[in-house]
Length: 226
Length: 306
Image 1 (cartoon, each protein chain N blue to C red):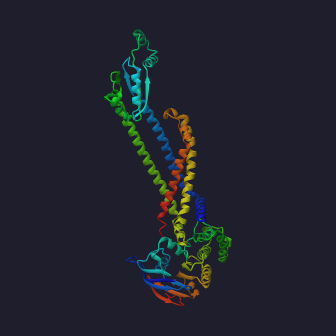
Image 2: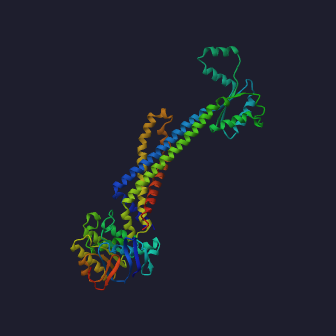
Image 3: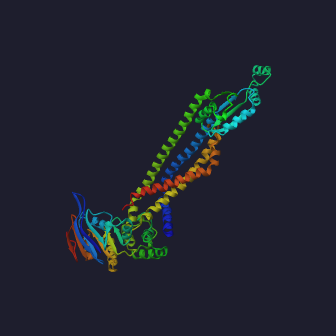
């Protein structure tokens, strides 16, 4: 589903974020990408979202070279990907239900679909009582659950979670992981970056370890070993 | 398409309502810009009025010999009227000239007495010519001096043309009027450019504050128009509200000017404001909407390329 072919990202000669990375993520996989801060995890995610361009190499989403498509095609591609970030990236001037509705609106869903699906997904992430609250009125765990709800509402083929537990306490972190696993069990590919050992080990899935922009391990039932 | 448009408009109104402090700051700036534009419109009216008043005071008079036949004078009058530079020609007969002279000197007993003693009308008839532009008097005067077919036979009845006596004053007035118009245009241009830059930067600032949100919208998969649209709607709202505030402010201001400054300005500002209300409303509304929308459109471009 995702193919990295010799991808490098060099900001300057002292700052190499990715160094000749080649990797494949198949449909339906749950992949954890681990590594220290600055190992290149977020850069890798940015490459998939076309939020940044590689200095060298190519990134494919199925048969599409992500960095060779125009703005309209990119917009359509992003609708196939649900993204969850450490800093949540919610729309601060929209309520919880409006944040989810926005993702549905841009995907071209009708008002009826929005009215019926939003309450369901809020219920799924246990946020029904927060439907009309703004993000700044919610706790970190609630914000992250809202971000996940927004990411899954359009049933994307891929969920990217960049350090989703970074700002959460262990209980909330565990809860977020369980939701991601459940999504994966339903067939959605999940790429998770983290440096939380507990999260990786309780996931018990494929682990790719990055160090200084290079892949140093790729274990099928990996553990967090650095 | 209609659903998309409705969602964009709704989103624009919601954003406007929810970020009220920023919205009102932008409205304040747009209002200031529109006030500058309105002031310029009113000042242009004052300038235009004053200049046309001055222009109206300039004329060329052809004095005829006493006893010149009225037919010849009227023939000349109709010839002059056909000149493209001429705005109007007024004929004053010898009798009328005498009457005007007597009225003007009614307190001057010796003059009236001298006039009575002559026992005949010493004054000739005259034609008063007004040109469309001050600079055209010279060509009119030259035309009268020439041996043109139109004026053929008139030379014998013309006593004098006062243009050459007034030439210096007329030329100077022409320079002043043209200078004032140029200066007025320049000041207008500079003020409008400054106001537009200030407004553009203020709106750019409001969008800068929202740049994170813009990035998030793009990541979620919103197309450019879906991101840009609500900001442009907000721009339209800024323009409309600012227009209403500006007109509301200028109502009492022009009323006061009309009441107290009519003598000084030479014309009633309030009457001008009221009689040209819809034109002024149109100018400000269009300026406001174009300013708000275009500023938003341009300011957001930078953040849309991701």
